[in-house]
Amino acid sequence: MDGSIIKSLPGRRPPYVIVVGNEKGGTGKSTTAMHLIVALLKLGYRVGSIDLDSRQSTLSHYLANRGAYAEESGRSLPMPEHRCVERSEADTRGGAEAEDRRNLRKACAELAHCDFLVIDTPGSDAFLSRLAHENADTLVTPLNDSFLDIDVLAQIDRRRREVLGPSRYCQMVWEQSNRRAVAGRAPIDWIVMRNRLTHIEARNKREIGALLAQLATRIGFRLAPGFGERVVFRELFLNGLTLLDLPEMTEGGGEATASSHLAARQEIRMLLESMGLTAALSA
Image (tube, rainbow, N blue to C red; front, side, top):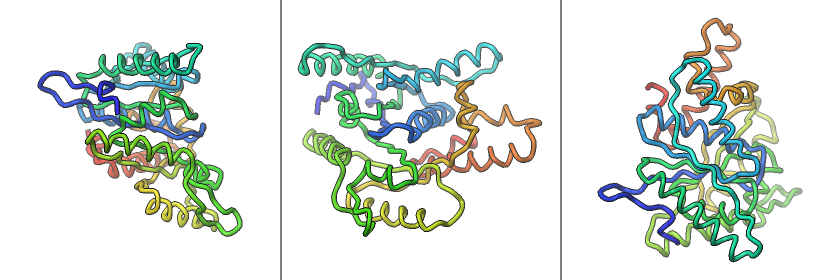
């Protein structure tokens, strides 16, 4: 592993790196990253955020909306130090990878004083994404509760509902984790989130749960509860807010709204519990 990607300042440990990764779009990576960022900020940590998906820039737009809302409303909202790393447009593969490495190294060096780095990755197999995975202390992979999304983790026999083998994404994670081991660092702590779960016990839900349990043992990740399908997430994006900001927002919102927000915040609590960050909700 290129140890120069994540550096520490004299007398300090290097930042703890949380990478939100999945080679599929629409799984809630940026929403997850934003909630982790705000949770850590509310715990009093210095947080740096890096957006590697410069084409979509969803996390960058989310944070820009948050800054604009804070200025317009006069509310004090905690903000990370943010960087967006542009993907190289160099003509050759070697030149592009060298430039990508330099750009990510520079962003990490500028955020070396932070306690945590939260990195949002694109939904594709890009060199920048592989670099981020290689340097991840914890990898969080949001996954929609469908057989289509499980395909990101493994090849599935669709008739027998059995695992045939790991996916290319899994193989990539293994490779980057092995690079860490060769460099004498701990393996990646991999957490897979089941997003958009329904509250109805359906056959499809049970089958997916059984397959994910098999994969967790076979591939080596931990399962964590994710977020339900809620309109509130799309609404919050426009103002750059998270569920952790809602106590200021729910007065007069009505019983149904308050109930929905409470259930959604409980989903955040369960994720934070799996990562040891539960104190954020009582801050």
